Image (cartoon, rainbow, N blue to C red; front, side, top):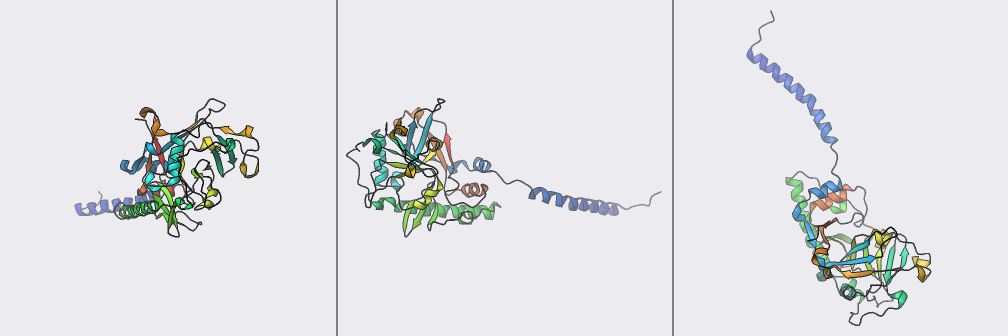
Length: 329
């Protein structure tokens, strides 16, 4: 007959067994936690709070249309202009050009690999409208841009501090994720990458940016001739050229074009020029056809998580601000 065991000794034995099982299970759980995959950029965006997605006003959008490609596919590019309260004469001129449909029928006459695609009325010596503003070089800068960046970055810092302390996240500051070798203080404001240098605030020349042609100082151009930045090398032009907006959808349609073979990427012969079907303000379309977009707020911690999820240490332009297309009204 086995020896008698008291109830107390049985409890002690069970406790020892349970403790041993727990100790053996602990490393397994720890290992499982260690191997838990990090969320993908797409998962981070899907998990972002709904109220951190902000609408882009239709009044700030332009539709740039080229003829259909050889297979009959539409080629339409959507451009977001810098909001009126954060821009100057260049953007006001661009709005006038688009409202008058001045670019309809003008040409793309320069496609420089990984640099710019340039268009406008130059090849045909098209006369510009008479009601345009003279644009000084000081128009490249706008104090409202700097103020908005400071406001949004302060809100972002506060939101990250709260999330890290009370929600268990480990979100790093922006400047711990990116490097900047262009000598500017950078950050985001209203969804735009913004720099400040020598006390002057300006939109950064990221891939997809629209920059008006610059002539001999102090002639900053009217905005009739525009380059669409197609490579990151243009960051070296920060503060040298103005910036009026950016492509937010369909950049491939102005990038995947035959390259110019003359110096600077210009087309060597006029027969190579690509005719533009139309450039118009989206607000001119019927409401049911007006495109709708949202951007991830600059004060959202999800923005930093999204940037870090891409890995690597590029500059502030390397990972574009998330923008998503919504269903028309």
